[in-house]
Image (cartoon, rainbow, N blue to C red; front, side, top):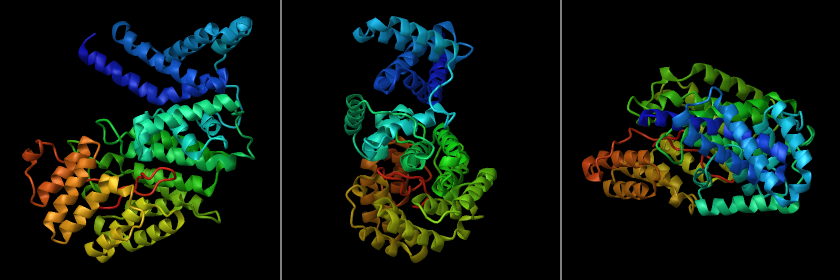
Length: 455
């Protein structure tokens, strides 16, 4: 097979693993038991490896997802047969294999029809810490790599790997009854699931690694799963609709976030005619449903901020005082340093760059922000607007040292050039981005988000 065909197969398997891998892990775990969660992950990974080895030479099967499912099932059953403790259970294994292959329908609880969403609730058992729950779900059920999860948590890949090992070990040691909660118990487990789906959307809206700035498949998967929650009577909470509104407002702008050559565009540079008006309308509808409760969540406030941006006919019409007021409420509710950082952008739009800089300086907990490249981009932008070229360049160079994506470094190189620093060729000839999005406060324990402050 040609190199081009091999690349096409690799792209296909990547998409399949992203879309079907989590569902297949959930299905395997439902049949094998939660004590074999690691086995389910391993055989799904091995099935993908075999696909990469076989398909370039034998051709892609008519039903690639079914091929992966069959290979993973066979690998799992072969492994269980080899385990000593299963030697006396050959008959039950054979019976299970026959039943499974002839009727692959998930026979867990009927509360949800989607295996992936069901397994999310399984992962969010109260005996696991919040951080372990979220990391486990993102890895096992959403298909994110440890590096991607580490970026979402603003921590190291090694720390995430240890967190995942501890979570799986606890599952085995305690033999946790990871049964799907009864409908009456589901709302209590809802917050963790919403937080994970928020992180999943964030990773798609602004990827933490790789060459693709935007991963629309992750955004749409998150929307699909939250929609399932919103459609189920037990999880039709106002905060569910608020998160769904936030996702629709931001997803409506996905196609307009880059120019023809892939440069990321800020809000004021985007072609608003290219925004998906149907998605914006759906966001408004969901925000209306979210307002029917008696409580307000961070998703309500972030959706309100996104609505201000999405419904403004042009940049000059953006209701920045309203956005600032919403950030004030968000900080009161969450005490998030990221929310405080983005509030400073709104302050600058309402009161000027010096007020924005003062707002940044007033943030008391800046330890994580100091390691976040956008914090320094914002400081550099304010310094440039105040006429302090040297300070602006220092902040931008610090941001460049912290940026993880080539596209982020491209953007920072552009900013350095714009304020009179090094020429682009002196920075390695990078293609510069036209702009960047600033993120807002996501759900704990991460501090990444998907809003649109302006720098």
